Image 1 (spheres, rainbow, N blue to C red):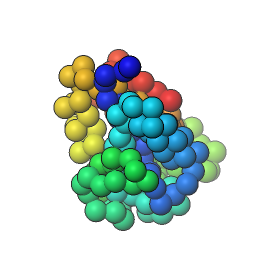
Image 2 (tube, rainbow, N blue to C red; image 1 turned 45 degrees about the vertical axis):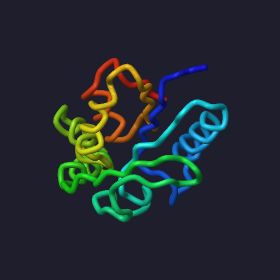
Image 3 (cartoon, rainbow, N blue to C red; image 1 turned 135 degrees about the vertical axis):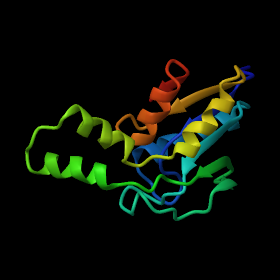
Length: 150
């Protein structure tokens, strides 16, 4: 039996039922059902269809669908992300800085990424999804080789 705790990192969890959230919930539920402790770290944002830079849910620990969940406040800066999206929408090329801004200023939580450092003790396995969001990129870039990408 796996003795490590699994922590699944995803930008949205619960209110929005998308592919990554559905996968995160299903994995955590099945792991817990099979005796492997699994929890979710997520942001306070509600969904990809709401304002990513505004907290909808309160930060802190809760239980969602029987899964231990910890929410963290979202970062508030969005202008560099919007500038990169505008270039993409207008068919313009992105600079390296624009590409970095797309991930850094998209849905993200510095507090969540910092909290992951406390889980790198060998007692936890960290999984992050989806691959194309700022939170996932920041978590993996900040803790290289320590988080598995889904």
